[in-house]
Image 1: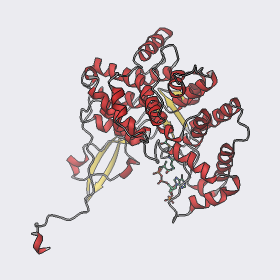
Image 2 (image 1 turned 90 degrees about the vertical axis):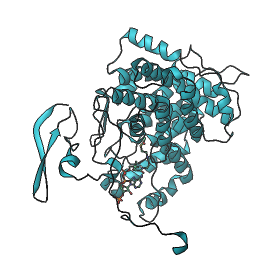
Image 3 (image 1 turned 45 degrees about the vertical axis):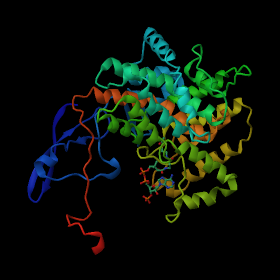
Amino acid sequence: MADTPKTATLTIDGQSYDLPIYSPTAGPDVIDIRKLYGQAGVFTYDPGFTSTASCDSTITFIDGDKGELLHRGYPIDQLAEKSHYLEVCYLLLYGALPTAQELENFENMVTRHTMIHEQMHNFFRGFRRDAHPMATMVGVVGAMSAFYHDSTDPSDARQREIASHRLIAKMPTIAAMAYKYSIGQPFVYPRNDLDYASNFLHMCFAVPAEEYVVDPILSRAMDRIFTLHADHEQNASTSTVRLASSSGANPFACIAAGIACLWGPAHGGANQACLEMLKEIGSVDRIPEFIARAKDKNDPFRLMGFGHRVYKNFDPRAKVMKQSADEVLDLLGVEDNPVLQVAKELEAAALADPYFAEKKLFPNVDFYSGIILEAMGFPTSMFTPIFAVSRTVGWISQWKEQLGDPQMKIGRPRQLYLGDTARDYTDIENR
Ligand code: ACO
């Protein structure tokens, strides 16, 4: 980030302040307001951070108007088509596509960390059977800091590296165990002869009583879902991870914070909410009713899987996901799937409606992902845990980048205080 001669001038009560402007490699210019309070004694106000860059980063770039998503400069559609999840993990973590040897070493490293400490099995058993797998994941991932003491120090580069590999490797095991526990089936140990996605499917769907062979097409679809969700720059959960980490918290605690944030229906929970909505709509003739509800200001209902803070055009991940939904349903011989039919008709109806066009609301990544996951056999409660597995590498890459930034400071926003000014305490008998 080089200083440029460009400046913005802010005038308050006749006094002018020059604020440096930085030009990024892509995206809009950024005004540096770090010294504003010190110089002018004012804060800026930006709830939801709609106009605020919280950090500089070299990992992911989104052009929301074009509908473009780049990881280290590579377009997501090329990565989804030509690459695979672990290669994308390497790219996000280390900044370049790996050589064959680097990839092999990385895959070996991740594969050999897939088991979790045996004592953690007892930890799972402490949860109620009907716990949402996200609740279990928040707890278990946070608890990793109680089991892996040799990789909790964020100031030690070697420990950071080990924690990164552990988290990427163990997250599918933890998500699969959360699922198995919720349905009362025995845990299935990871298998190092399987690739990342196949191993996850195996841990979720195998039972000790019989052999389970992973279908390579389903494994490819799973890998593509992981790839499409791998990172998304400074979204809510990633910013949560960075904020937690800014205090020096250990990596497992930071990722647990990210999982908690991801759970909400406005973020990662939207895939579950979207499929539930598509099922509630049920048939194409009810679409107009739901479109009308989404447009009604007095109705809190929103079209789940539609709209995005950054994309004001098609989410490029949604396009790949739609194609994948067709492929997977085709493979599984699911003809005329009513939910997919409702999804396609709903998408077409919303895109043709001026309300959605004016507000630039397009399908996001969650619109079609639930249909694929359900066809694979996952219950809706597993959709967000799968998102958490995929996004772990994004959280970790951003966390590592932040810790390597000499400008890192504890995150501490200001506020526009509108409460009472100082007043004297009143004794209870006088209130
Ligand atoms: N259905 C109907 N109207 C919508 C929708 C929607 N899905 N999304 C936004 N709008 C409308 C809002 O009512 C608002 O209208 P107004 O200007 O008349 O008040 C306008 O569009 C802007 O919406 P905001 O909520 O201000 O936009 P914001 O950027 O804060 O929210 C969000 C983005 C949370 C994703 C929103 O579009 C939404 O709730 N979508 C549904 C949930 C969803 O799919 N989330 C997944 C996001 S992707 C991800 O996390 C992987």
